[in-house]
Image 1 (tube, rainbow, N blue to C red):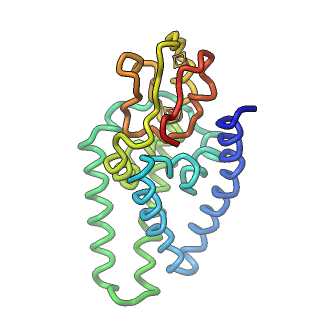
Image 2: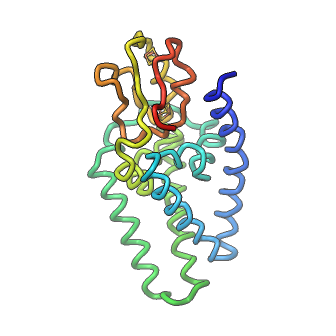
Image 3: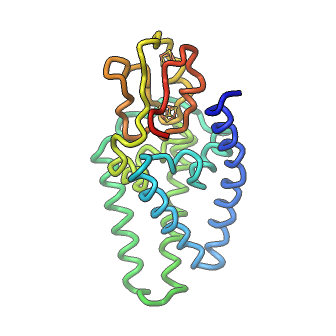
Length: 219
Ligand code: SF4
Ligand code: SF4
């Protein structure tokens, strides 16, 4: 077992625990609103790591992403996601809607530490319902294709921790099949680097490539 395989496996092993913590936090948030501030920690994590490693956070460190991978994947149709869900205008629209919703709900309770947690719980709940609905209909990771935090990490992390592809690629398509973000690394062979801002830096494709054509040049 090489180093990247053991890394992938250890991250996969962590996901059920993160998934469980996500469910407990979400349910607990309706009993104790300040648990909703957990969303702020996720925002800081996604954007902080985003500046250095792109969307690395969204692979396994995001508890909701782990929930999608471990539980939602079992009931998802796991089909092709329509391009609309990744379109910049659609993503910007979600960012604007959620920020507006959060702001409108925070204004009346501003200054009350306990009640200010409620809008975060509400946003977390609504977005999880949306992600679950579309996740079952299309693919378990569809929410991650337009999640506002993922979009910010995408913008902040362009060019960071690049996934490179060499001439050994035989265009077999295996990497595309294992990619949860439905990226086709093989299609970037001519440019030598997978220039897709939604890459989760998960190494699933690196491990599955029969030609060992893929690698991360900056781990
Ligand atoms: S799995 Fe490897 S050889 Fe196959 S298309 Fe992807 S990069 Fe190319
Ligand atoms: S392109 Fe490879 S590293 Fe990036 S998200 Fe897809 S499988 Fe993971």
